[in-house]
Length: 194
Image (cartoon, rainbow, N blue to C red):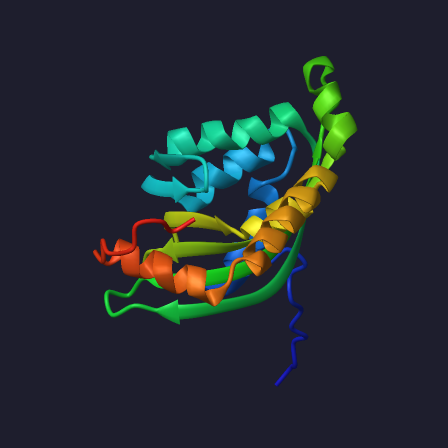
């Protein structure tokens, strides 16, 4: 009997939901002219829902329009994955949670120059992407949950604002917090909370 050598193809399809999400998120958020929109059409269910901190859209066509914004305003997008976990629901759908550090490099527009001079042209933030896939591994729901602290830390102005908020927070005593909670709970004997 003759033995046949088995080779793995160089561009094989991802085997599981977590690998699939790792493979298409960088393409989806990328700045290439055609690949991100094609990735949305290929991997997303026609009735998909996409949520981020600013926008919620329903349907793959609207999700594709959001992807188009990346190409319009960004010159580069880099993603670094942290932990990626995968679970399966009783209905057979898969849930993938991916921790991602994203760096967006904005194009230079005349209208944005004052803003870019203040905060820079690169915006880096941490987010968790919750991606729900059906049994056919089509995305039915995608939610990007951002860390407010990482958004504020991404610019000098944000770091200053975050530092001020932290100082104010440390200046407030636990008595103040207790009094405020009592007032919210309905104790109107507390007349002045500030």
